[in-house]
Length: 362
Image 1 (tube, helix red, strand yellow):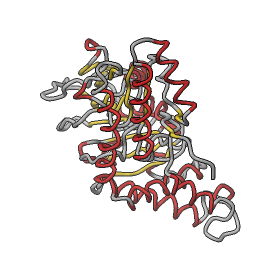
Image 2: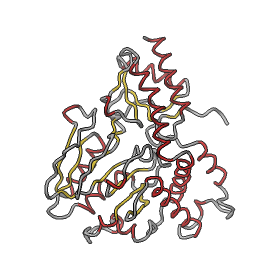
Image 3: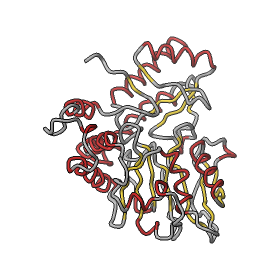
């Protein structure tokens, strides 16, 4: 094998090499059945075993109590921006949103198209470079739910803790930091996450939902946008994204076999500290974009002194095997996405490259 790139893409993102190699071994002949898993029926016992096992892995890793369903849907997190209010925003109710950046904004706009929605907390005044405090948050009496985005990939900000919302259901878009750290999943009534950052390749969206949350869902929701369609059919109502679920299964096995969320969190801190320390000790040559107490462990955003220097940084980085360091097109600058599958060695190499680039260009 040729040397693998230092992959810092924001999504689709790096996958564990062990997972890719195992998938390669099974690609043509899955478990001795003489076919690829992409060729078999989603009604077959072989796929149903993958489907069920993947659900159990999610429950095990997150420590989910009884009463939750694990679903595999399509359409990405963007479809969940619509499905959440469709299913949960009943008549006379208001969806409450925490405004933290691009993805929170998209979710809020979808809810506004379907009913009443309000911003319960926001970091707009601070430039969306931090996460607002949710301590003592006051919600309206008719709150249908509180929706938050746990990690904003574009700004590079992340909630360090989650609120206790009492009887108001807490909804979380965890697309970019799920399985990266320990947290109390039982605080949430619904969690959704596009797979293409920490769970596997694109094509499948993980949804975790408390069963009693759906009891009052309107009966007029189109079939494919109704959560109960998937809870009642074990995510097998229609043809699921078979290969993406299979790959998620392998990734979750990899997480479990490498110590679960406790070890993922520990390693992610070690990895990102290398890069954040390089930024913080550069004397201003590199400048972090997110406020220190809201810094993401998944998406490190930073800038240089001017645009030309940033272009030179990207050119040199690409020559040295680094991929995906351009910031999002909406904000520019630089971003290193350090998801679970990005190895320590890649982060170490980036920190060393940054130090050398400063030495020769500072």
